[in-house]
Length: 383
Image (cartoon, rainbow, N blue to C red; front, side, top):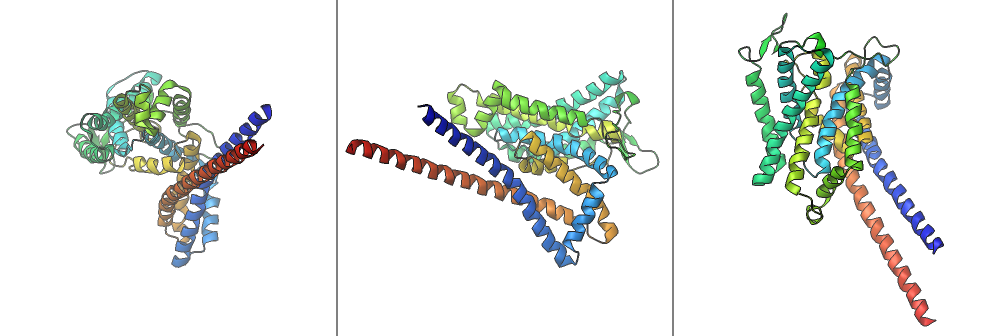
């Protein structure tokens, strides 16, 4: 009996290891395939692929470039975690882009209008951003549970509404003032008590890493703990995999949808905080756009795993930073966008191929074990 148990355990461990290797192979294959496609495009345009990659790597590993990449990756990571929360619930929160921008605008205006001691001031701004993001995302959650409206459609439309609402609020007669020395307009600057100091983390660089990288790390740890070590996380994942099974186990699916959307929006509200509190100190027309859509790509690349998302965020940030050097070598920086887009398409195809292979391998294993069991029973009967 012990030998049989040992054999079963060995097989189970082997399948777990194989599944882990296949899951790891999918994004690696996607990146390699994207590199091949990009190489073909570079050859067509007359640029040497290996030399171009060497230029990007040499520039990207410089201390200054590493700091820039880390600062970009902080916002990318928070945006991707917001998307991943929805994905784990089988919800597609396409509205992270509108949620973080509206949250940053309201939080910036709120932060500039109050005066508090430094820790409380920062905490108040962050809390307002989370509440605005959660509230805006909850609209899509309510539409889904009350009227059955697809969250994909509602969040896309809410992105457009958030953009229009932000433009209306970002008006000199309402929240905005003119930025000195430019034609730009933005909210009043945050006071020193709401500004987060940088961290001298990378030796050899005059730039500092955004202090809110600590917030990104904390959110990643909390995301992992809640989803994998709590009953709520189990209910959320169970609902995402099978609503009927979740209902049978006593889970209130509508309630979980609302909570998941609110949590996703709350984390989305944090995506703009590294830039607001650590760099710009106000929300203006030049506030970075597109973090939400980048987060979707990174969440797919990292397969909703906090560690995988971290690597995906750093890869995206590395490519964005490295693109700055290409123009100096008369190479179009848009080649990076081609590579990023190809990575997204490739990783989706790679995960689907891996998923189909795993299903096929499991079917072959079950068939083999059933055939083996039939043979054993036949031998027993003949004896």
